[in-house]
Image 1 (cartoon, rainbow, N blue to C red):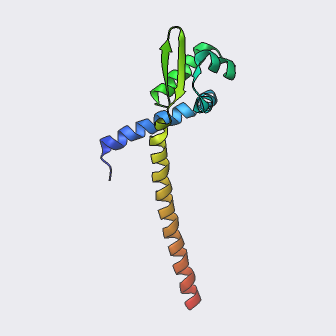
Image 2 (cartoon, rainbow, N blue to C red; image 1 turned 90 degrees about the vertical axis):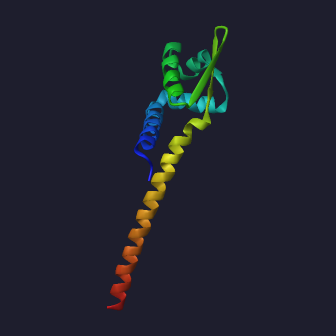
Image 3 (cartoon, rainbow, N blue to C red; image 1 turned 30 degrees about the horizontal axis):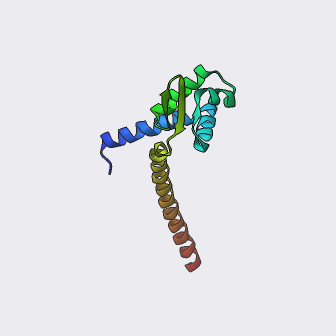
Length: 120
């Protein structure tokens, strides 16, 4: 079993990821950046929203560790960081295993009931 402090940190990372991916514009940014890096101006043009809005969305994505950006002169270039999805993948895998185990136990229970009825 995981220590509460470790679970709390993992849970907060997953919360940040769900929050970051809970907005359609941020999901579109992630999809675009997964293809290739882009400047804030390019993202603003692609998403048809202001550069200020892109900056705000970028801050959320960076906090969730889904994106990172660098500034060279007046141009801020953004790129997707696929490693940022790892806590979400871990969360999904954990819950998938839990539900598979539950469904297997249910299947065993139902099979036992059916076998007992066949014997009667």
